[in-house]
Image (cartoon, rainbow, N blue to C red; front, side, top):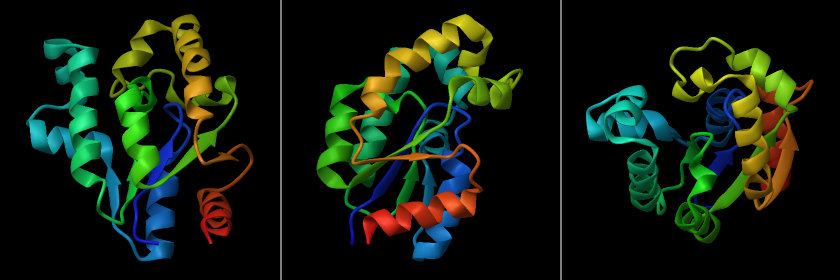
Length: 164
């Protein structure tokens, strides 16, 4: 399998952590899409949101996915990557899309007060609405794997079982 593996899911679900374990187990490189964008753009995600807006950031995500689509990496996407239909199509046609899921209340406990996540400033109600709006988009993935009550290693093992 030479195509990328895209890990999607709401913020706090463990995409980067699980991605690191998965990449190690598969002998692949982990790409954190947000970090990739920050390096390429020269600004941190909160600055991109503040200075250019969410729509501009979503276009940067699309460009990044297009650049990485031919590489056999494990790609930990940002939580909102599914909001752009072109990004969903790029991921679906170039690799395997894994939706890591967990209940909203669990995710909110993990991300509450995290200043590095610009959308947490919206508050719990707005975040839950965002989560619910994105849920059907996440569910378009090739496979859905719960991270609830699983370690990152157990989650990575489940992904490996699916892709093999």
